[in-house]
Image (cartoon, rainbow, N blue to C red; front, top):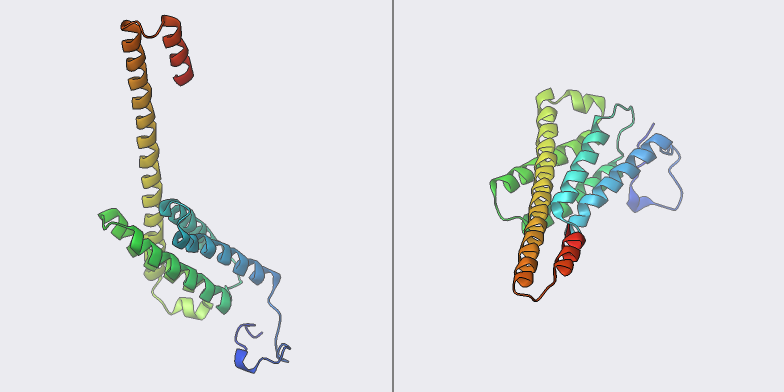
Length: 197
């Protein structure tokens, strides 16, 4: 069976080559899923989302996809699209990071993502030619990125809740001060406490 992506596009006459076998449903599904994951990572470039959220979700999705056992391989076109999306996202990521150790680890983990994208398209022979530790390292690097992203998001959640508590406590102190000076009644202070508490 020939890979449907090996056909020379410069000779394209509108018809598939005589020896062309259409991709299987499973390969089309794999290409679609990889394209969806790549699109998530590409979205870092448009910056509508927090890059940490995208990296965490993208990395986890790519790890899940790569760890599934299947006979199908990502097509050459699917692999190239995924690699292109990874590169677009990585360039945007370089521009948005400030050089902390955590972020350098995340950028290093991108190498793992590129290796995994290639791994998804490789034949059994190509996979066997590489030392098994190489792919273990790639998976671990990407897992580090997922963990780093999740930690970053958790720290943001902690900070957001702490800010909310401080705002509520300061509001309560202001209300009590206004009550003490006679500018608010006890009922008004109680109403403010119920609204914010």
